[in-house]
Length: 475
Image (cartoon, rainbow, N blue to C red; front, side):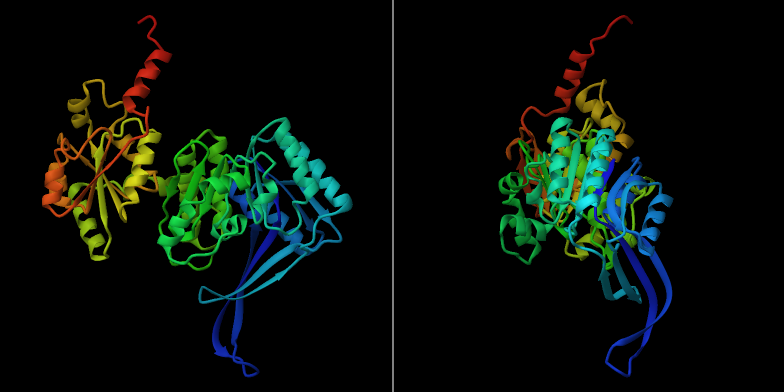
């Protein structure tokens, strides 16, 4: 992985603020600690390394003490900094935060923000071309502080045209990368507004509806195959040419001091795409990694082990008794429960799109999962391909799935009667008249919604294609 962009030193000064200053009505902060960590594009590089990539970092920093501290921190994290140009006439970018009682009281910014020029620019272009040819994937982290000059972007476009890589761009001005051949772009809500010359809305519902209408325009303006518009606590809307839109969901957290979640999202997204994940899976991994760092606070990274633990099924997979206890608590919070059920043997894009649409009908999506015995009775002795535990684990990795409850009966009627969902969702070829659970749901005060699967997407079809591709030979 090659990461190029503005290296910053995020410096945190910690203290207590128990008194007011006599000279002015401002708090006196008695400092007792300091922490210096890589920020900006350097944080994206450190995140990529923490997630398992071999990382080369390209940037320009000063020959000052702050530059020394920043490069030493990156090297200690295992990031290759040989591509960083040291420029005597530039000052390293520093974001210094004064903290008291876990709150930011003040941020002090300094460093050179003008464009890199002359020999420094020429040397960075040389290093970019060499690193690009070694890379499997490239992240551009452009904060608009002068590292990604027009000449450097032109060199990036030439290399991408010559030998395309997975190229993910996170930039204040994404329109500058339209002709580069970007695989994926990640604007936040504000950046998307500027890109599309749209106006800001305030409620979550308004912003989601507004962003959902951006698909064609945002793909065209960025030139990217994939665009993930991040919407803070509302998750992200992910658009891909020729595919239905996909939404990721987050776990909101009160931590107001989390910094760099966008860098984490981009690093995880780029790595997942480079490893061959499809877009929904890559987006969910990116969303999960960002959630991990938001829960930790400050400028930090998401190690692969923590991402793995976060995605384990143990917090989502419940037995019926535990599910009903959790459901009662959720209802007390005014949450709307959506329920669906199925075998979900070989999870494919049709399933994922369907589950994503089901989640959008309420606040909490509960999936009833047929256990192995139930699947055999419904599908035959050759099924399931994957056991209950594996199927649950894969479902749990989807951000749209909140709770999973295995059941052994042929139908979920008993479970529906106990759970009393606000919305019951089914897909495929069902109609209201042919869905046996519909009268039960409605008698309990719930609503029945039917959602179509994507055409030509089915577990049976996948199994048949595998059989044709790998016919049995010998014994």
